[in-house]
Length: 326
Image (cartoon, rainbow, N blue to C red; front, top):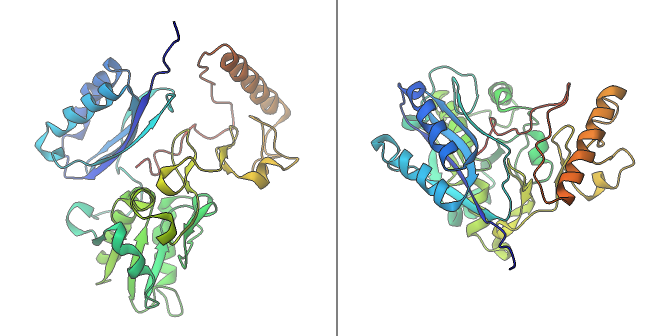
């Protein structure tokens, strides 16, 4: 009898909402996910919830239904993707000061975010030369794809964005004079918070792409699209393109950078050990440990098993999901 490959549902979600009892939600939410074989990461903070989870479709739907049973999350929206394998290794529900870290006290995106722009109306907005278009994602994400005419702030983390805004608001900067600004990010959470930042600083006309790049790629036909390249995603898919089709990138298992054809062809690329971005940054002992982890992962794959590779000393966490999982 031929075995059937299990299908997994991935759901990315976030919502800004006043959540003073956020800490009380952690244990029941963790228990619920564990009971339904759901993995991923969910962040809880006084300002709301953010995360990506994956598992059997009925398990993921049970978690979403539990969240929406709370009146505060009744309008919670999520984005779905279906795959043949579980993209996460474990389930973590974490308590944070912010569901996406900007480090600016007093912002309230639930009440003071910018104006939503639907994907089908986005092209006409960013085609206006009077509108300043800003990609609020990090440099490694922008490097594999973005919208035409978008400004790259060259940030390494979202927490650097306020400093970029301050610098560009000075005379001669891209934001000088408080022009009309259109912002976008992967799923909407960073641009929602960054528009609240600009509004708190006196910008009157601030817009953001509803549903983020992912909703745009899902909604706008490729022949009408102003998007170029792939969109980095915070799970094992690595990147997606138009129609949310799998992208053209792999992930460096050492430094977690997305790798395209040029990087994969580099002599500095060694599967599981190094790539052009992290070559020469590890000790010989660390490289040996990484090589052994890769060997064990390939052996497990050949046996049809899952191998959870332990994080090696000096390597970053498995996922950048805390920066923008949605």
